[in-house]
Amino acid sequence: MKLAELTAFLDSELRLAEFAGDLSNNGIQVAGGDQEITKAVFAVDAALESIEYAEDAKADFLFVHHGISWGSGFRRITGVDAKRIGLLFNAGITLYAAHLPLDAHEELGNNACLCRILGLKAVTPFCKVDGNFIGFSGTLSRGTSVETLVKKLKGALGDPECNFYGDPDLKAKKIAIVSGGCGDTVLLQAAEAGAELLLTGEFKHQHYHLARELGMSVIAAGHYATETVGVRAVMNRVAEKFGIEVEFADCPTGM
Image (cartoon, rainbow, N blue to C red; front, top):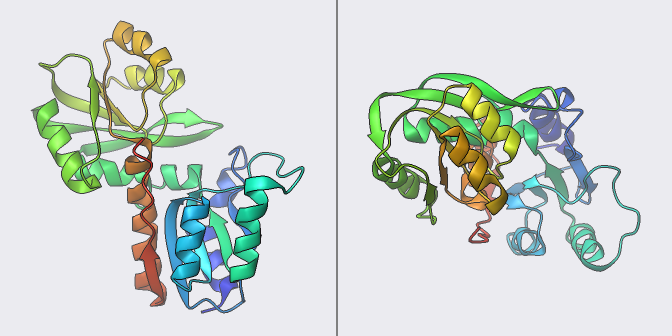
């Protein structure tokens, strides 16, 4: 298939135009490949490990959640940046990134996928960032123990380390979800949404006391693990729609 056809589909499906405020430069970041795409690799991070995986797989397209161009872009292409970009060009691989658009998508997004894993109903958008909702909140039919929720997550995400902070006796019914990193604004908006529990990726020291004072329990299932699900969903959609060969490059960080 043509590169332009694939990127036009991704741009439209993930609604990149709606996320002008995203720090990530979403879309094509490095046009290193041919105009004809025969194989695509999908990964969470545009790290050298993922690029080398795509090269070994003889792919000509690499889709990632975390790209290599952020904000105003590069000032100098040296060091690690030079290695990554050089390998992309030398291997003829086009790099495409989708950051907040992939968190926010109501079907293919990381947070939508996590909602389905937990079986949430009455799902609604929450957590506004730069004018766009990127998370979702929803309810369970009955209060569910943290142990049961963690078991579901481990089974679906490849057994990541899930850390819990909060009331160990909680039977959660209203849950808010924001994959990746958690900040103060996420906690505050989860509380405003009436959630008893927040599912996120990373939970840091500086957020502990705010969560405790808000009465918010938190499951941190790993930044990497919680952001594999959307990437895989996009991969499957591309394979179904275009019939090209696809692979997921699993490069976990343990965080």
